[in-house]
Image (cartoon, rainbow, N blue to C red):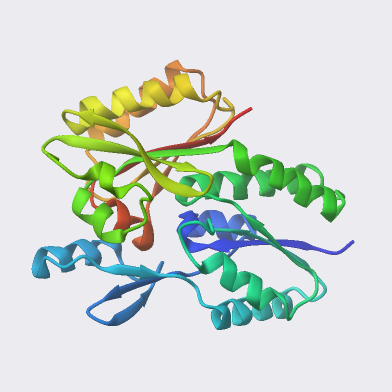
Length: 283
């Protein structure tokens, strides 16, 4: 039986210890500051915010290029001879990474690409579903495995509140950015993934503590999320009291497992400090 290897981008915010434990291969995306290229996962997120405080400039992010994917896939096949690679990729609607992976994969056999149409915790939820499925059914036919993973793509629901509108606007990834204009005092836009695009779907007003509670209830009322697993994501600067509130609400709602994910450099560059998000798979 040939071994199946899952891969994804650093924009999935998969913690290093989880990736290592589950055997998921992660290719880094990029953060650019003053023309210097840094690999996501190797640059401390705190450096991004320190850079902003020092220069008032917001870093930019770039995708994984096709040459990097070629090297990445080559290394996987070298490390795991004869393996089948299933790459679960960062949404193609907000980055050129997936298309670059498609270009690179044309030179290989037995690499299958799935556009997750999601980012961060929404992408991680699909990756971890795939890992759990393969662990439960190690003899599953690869074609059936891919089909089942693809079935989860439209079920993955990510919603988040940026910690800084300056960072969000500068990133240029929100498709209806005009919705963010006007008076922004104490206005916190809810950002969701719709058909792979980052879209502002609602505006909240008030403190982050009050808004996160409202957002959490709205999310759980809107989506029938599998009670087996819920993901909370945050960037540096989110108040600990908010984390406790969210844990309490999740417990009251009957979630069996809650995983907190700290956003990496790429996602933190778009969300800004103190961002909060929720992700899970609908049943």
